[in-house]
Image (cartoon, rainbow, N blue to C red):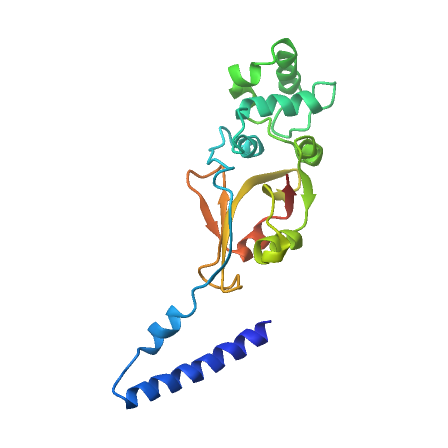
Length: 229
C-alpha cells in the first residue's frame, strides 16, 4: 500500500504540473500547492464517543481505572468503584497487593471498610494508593463487562467502514504491576491513511484536564493492553 500511495502521489504531481502549464498557456494560472491541498482532505471514517464518555479527572494518582469507569456516564463516583474493587478481591482475607502500602495499613483500611462500606468515600485519603492492582486488573475489568481485545482488531474498526465501529475501549499502559488507564473518545481518519497529519485519535486521559489528541503510532508505542466493553 505504501508503494501504491507513492506512485499515486508522483502521478498526481505530474498531472497537476501539466494542468498548470496548460492553463498558463491560456492566461489562467492556478497555484499548484493550493490546488493539491484542496484535493487531499477527505474524511474517510469518524468515530465519536463524546456522548458516551465524559471528561473526568482522577482524584488520586492511582485511581485512573476508577476515573475511567466513572467517565462512562454512570452514577457511580470513583470512590464507589474503589470500594467495589476492594470488596470483590481483597475483603476476603487476601494478602496486601500494594508495594506502597504497609501490611498493617492495608489490614487497617480493609477493617474500616468491613465496618463501614462508605469509608472509601468518607475517608478517601486513606485509600488513595488503593488503585486497581496489576494482579487483579483483568478479573476486575471482566467483572465490569470488559474483555481483552487486540490492537489489530481496534485498528481495523477505526479504519474500515465495512468492519463496524469499536465499542467503549480502555487502553492500558502496563509496566510490571503498575500502569495507567485512558478511554478512547473517538477518531478521525483522513484519506485512508493514519500517516495523514489530520488523522487523529482522541483520548480521555484522567491525568489531564483536557482531551488528548494522539496519532496511531503513539497509541501503538504507549499502550500494550486493550479492553473493550
